[in-house]
Image (cartoon, rainbow, N blue to C red):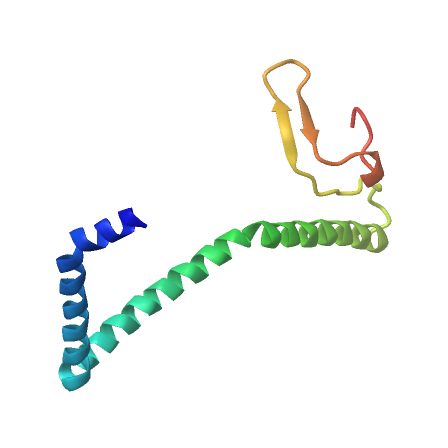
Length: 130
């Protein structure tokens, strides 16, 4: 408690000065229309910029869900194209493949036998040595 009182006494004139500054600014902005309009315009520009940057940040943070949605749509459309090819053109051999969207976890492409590790498994229809 003594430290708090010492702090207040030490910076008393600074606190009084800041209080007077606040009172002066309030009086200026409430009494003069020009200053009031200038302040409101500046604060609107500032809040508009902050809102715009906040929206850009939230859009960036939601990109993963958007990318996952696009990946799922892409997988569905590729499989749909394969089904249409099978139905419309019987002369073409069936490829026997079904497209599964997956993310590459790691890749080894520097050896004779290259391989990829993906985030899909047998539950998703992916088999070993495919």
